[in-house]
Each structure stands twice: as structure tokens, then as C-alpha cells.
Image 1: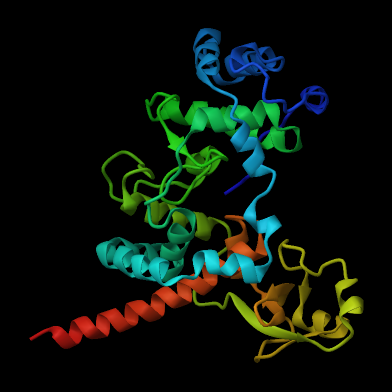
Image 2 (image 1 turned 60 degrees about the horizontal axis):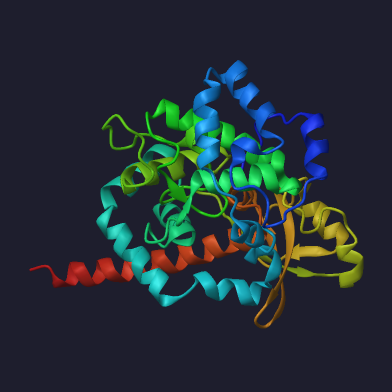
Length: 346
């Protein structure tokens, strides 16, 4: 999940634009051309010593596979018909039911306190890490340093995350060289970026440490809190099916089509453009119109506020739809499992 909360100097952006991504760049990030400015900032603005920042940067390695991976994320390289089967599979549904059963109390409490359905929380954790089974094998300091210093397209964001990572590990009294995560530096069951951890993670089991790495309870509460803080509306729909009522090229010419921003147009506006819901939806309901290339052809949907909230976790509409579809499958399977359990009771 990504959040932009840090200002990157224009001077550094300009320097970054001139850097190459060659695999032969120095592995010791304390010697990177941008390191002195970064170290100076960490000392002056955040109270670290130059010695400790330089020590940690000297241990960080440039990882070319990370640069390769971030250049071709599945959300941009696949169609919906290719993307959906990655996540909506029997094993992930079965594992989701198992995770729900193992963490029933925490999920029920999170749903009550934050208003986010248990199946959505479970689905997020399922999509992100297969319920904690795959939380990432990259050292976070390698991932964030590689992307902060050697990936110009998004260097400001990842530089911000590297700042937050050092602050996070200081706050939690952990070694920055210790944690592992995704190639983007996301960590734990729910794959929180460092800034998201600092802003939204919660100590849901009350043991004094917000542990998104090993505590499913803390991960559950943290995901629910993230959704609540990003505008989740309890009891409201996520998406509704739609259809085109005008020629596709004329509809797609609308600047707001497939744009994942807070819904700017309502259903009445979209009807005028040429998109209409297939189910009952109030004319003044804010919505995002979306086109997917599905297994049976083009699909059209209205994404509502809760759909937009899911995209705050990952900005891809396909990601949000996969989370939603998986949540439906998990809930259906959970209901069946509970009925079987109830029938087996004496």
C-alpha cells in the first residue's frame, strides 16, 4: 500500500533523473551520490547520527531483480481475465476459511469496531500474502534503498518510505537490517509500507507491540483501521454491474472513465455519458465507471466509495475487484463450513 507524505527536494529529483539503473552500480549505498543529502536530512530533521545512517546504508545492497519487478507489475501487464485466476482459486478460498476460523474472535471484533466486514479483511490478507504464508523474502532496507536511490520514476515516494522505515525501527527498537518484506518494501501479513505502519497499524491484541509480522490479530486490526481511515462505508456496496448505452469509443472518451480517484460523477452523470447500472442504484450515487477485459469479453462496472477505498491499498481497479471477488467466495465458503459444523454438533 502506498501513501505520499514526504516532500522530496527538486534538486534531488533532478539528480535522480540523470542516474542509470545499471547492475554495476556500487552496492554500498553510503557511497551513492545522493547519500550525503539523505544522511544530512536524517540527522537534521529526524535526530539520527550520521554514523548510524551511513552504517545502515553501507549494508544495503542494490538488487536488480527488484528494479525488474517494479517495472512490470501484474496489475499493468495482465488483463482482468489473466489477473483474476491468480487470486480466485480454490486453495486461496479454502485457506481463507481456515484463517477466518483460526481468528474468528479478532475478525468479529475488528468488524464491530471498524465497520469493515470480516471477509474483506481476510481477502486483503489472502491476496497480499496468502494469509501470512508469503510475506516476502527481500530485506526491506535493500528494497527501499534500491528504489529510493536507483529508481527515478518513483524515487521520491520510496525515499519517503526509507525515511519512515528508519523512524519506525527506532520507535520499535528494532534493527533496520532485520526485517524482510516484498520487493517494494511492504511488510507483514497485510503488506504495510513503513508510512502506513506508522499511521495506521494498531496493537489489536494489547500486548504493547504492534506486530504486523507475526501477530494475525494485530494484522487484522491494522487492515481494518486502514480501511476505516480511508473512507470505508459500513453496510454499503462495493461494485455494481453496468452496461454501455452508447458507442464504446464515445464513452471511453470521457476523461473520468477508468480513473481511480474519489468518485467525481454520479450515476445520473454517467447515464448521460452512456453508462448505466444493471441493478437499482440512486441517480445521485457517486461512482467510478470501469471496463475490464474478462474471460467472456468486455465487462463494465460501477465502483462505489468502498471500491475506491480498496484501491487505497493498491491503486489498480483489477486489484480491488480481485479482493472483492475473493471476499465473496470466502464468505460463501465460510457460511457452508459453519453450517456443516453446526450440523455435526450433538
